[in-house]
Image 1 (cartoon, rainbow, N blue to C red):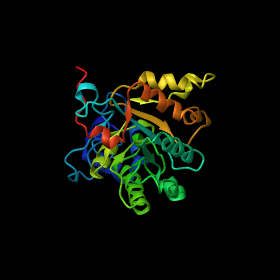
Image 2 (cartoon, rainbow, N blue to C red):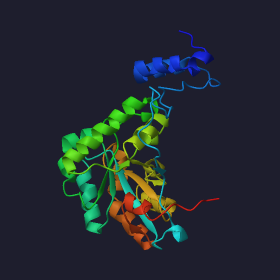
Image 3 (cartoon, rainbow, N blue to C red):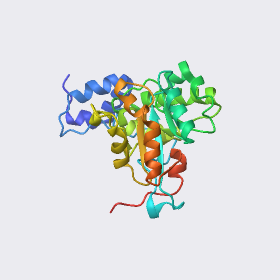
Length: 273
């Protein structure tokens, strides 16, 4: 079916996409060249509800880090360690043991399916570490419409509240893919969307695993949010096996460790301009 520019921009096209869901949206956009805007309503990039009703949120927040240096009201060099994709019995207990040994809090962005299957792994984390929402099935939200994004987030928050006694306040999109529909869904769920400003780059130290300590330290600045994982491909064990060394190096550089919520609560990050 050929889709014209006019059709792509009309409510009729938007309604058709909304009715068809994410699959329909993907098929529709396949026919549009790069000079043609995507549909106003129903596509993954649209931050407007498909039925054009008013959103339940008036604002949302996306953060890549917290305030640092002179911009930090605490006057401290602070950093937040984060771990995605668990909880899982392969590595999560190893991460928790390293954090316990170093007396360091962290923020875990949990998959709903893993909370369902392995939620007990974080029973002792409540009140010590921070648990955030990482969707239920780790689907690419950059490809999903508002309804699908909302369901991925809501299923996970509901299960986490049931399992841990409180709902998460933070959200991290899988792959760091954040389109308009996901922004809207997270804002309506009352969640702060958390990205990162430093990460464990295991691929850059292949063959020289001990270099991961220097690589992470080279990226960290006051206010950094550091991305790592507590399950996944085997190369990620490079970081997990050296987590205590990473913590020790950052401490020697003058950093203290906090959760993401504590990091961003210190105030807005200073502008780089």
